[in-house]
Image (cartoon, rainbow, N blue to C red):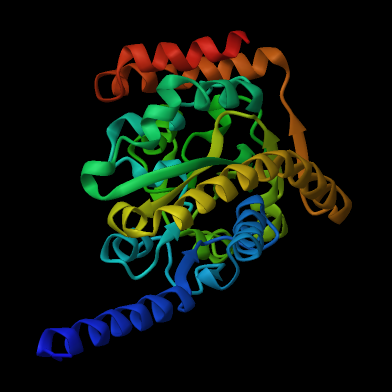
Length: 332
């Protein structure tokens, strides 16, 4: 029997390839999930639940590392970290994505949605789902919408009608729409990182804040703000996003399983959000440090009218049809 060089090399090559494949299969894909809020918030709970379910479902194929409370990257750095591949999953507030897709400014329009049920209807619609994929040219893929809840106003003075906000300094996210919202109220918006909110309120750098009850409580804002106006004037929602190149580069079976886990976790997060907000609202009441102001229907209408010019200002960038689609979701 004639033994050739090829007959010796080919089995060795196949054996090496097999070993490499086995090694790759045994090496978990490390997925870093970073966010800027506390573990006790809806987003924080969602990230931990995603880790738990993904590792249970996929065994040693993946390892999910969760970094909460800006422990890895803060507000100002997390998007750059995602695009460079230093982290793989984020759940930024929708407000932070306007630089990558102007249409997402829709979610910051004040008094657009009547309640969370309307938000759900829009996000599950064709228009809402299309927005998840609207940044892929910029290497960002949206995987899901996660709720935090409806926004309330906090301040060091009582806010019952729009003129009460005049001259006050409000912390806002890096959002042009939210800046204009407070300008329309003749207040002064200040863009400040989430991690700096407590100190900024405590020292008087700003006088007020807008957020959900769970974020107000977890950041101890109620300790440094005398009043909370239950305005339900907007939403704090998140888009779970990933680096498109990273996600598309995953083995198809891993990616499919992670998509399924994300869908399951999203249902749980969105159920949990309202429960956590109501729990934390009660904790604020029990603490006795802040007075919660309930608006009358007439007062709420005054606020709505005061900020209505913001809709018109951003209609060109967002699209009148998309705004109307969102408004229609209130009719469900």
